[in-house]
Image 1 (cartoon, helix red, strand yellow):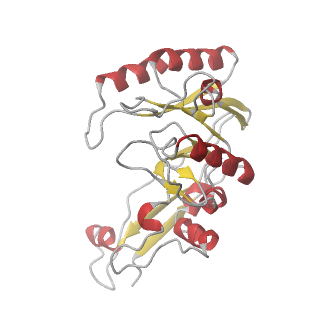
Image 2 (image 1 turned 30 degrees about the horizontal axis):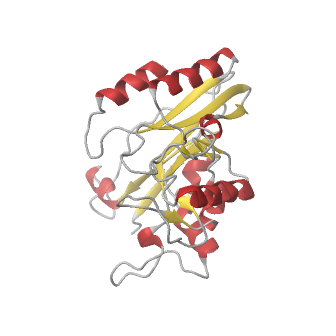
Length: 271
């Protein structure tokens, strides 16, 4: 029997969706035997309308650590001489979900480099991802990545420059980081189904180490610092220019169910 059951829902003049069920979920729905009848939950498709778009947002994405280094008896998921095919293979099952959207985004929480350099930020965890992963993201249906996160400066300016060059080489748009503060705060502007939209990414904290992880002036690159002033200025500017701002904010506290008051206040201010 199959381990995954995938249903494609579509109708004329409606946005399509895909939903998959594991064998365990099918069992929960009453499918316990070869002749069992299963009734899946109803779904509602969204009708096309003038100016209406389907946006898809994924979370943190990276292909470092265990992807390229074998974990115990398990083989490496990204082999050194097969990085292009292996990175695409990792995303093949998610690709149908991404492609149905008009515009899909993830948070690229890693620097992109051919190999790991010796010099790195003074922090406990640093990530790097091979450049072929950028091509795999784009091929899978990702249209844009935000770099406004706490790993976009893990290997300092060298790593950030390599990341931006790789994204440019593969033609994958981004915002949320730059080699200067002005570049980091610059949004990615795009028209989707006639809508003029601005995508911007922010990091909620600078880090208590030196050099920290946010862009500062013309002399230091990094992530766009998501202060109340920066968010208010960016959102207000794009709004007054007739664009719809889309804010992605990387912050708060890990492994908790509620945002911090700082995060909550900044996002409410953006609204």
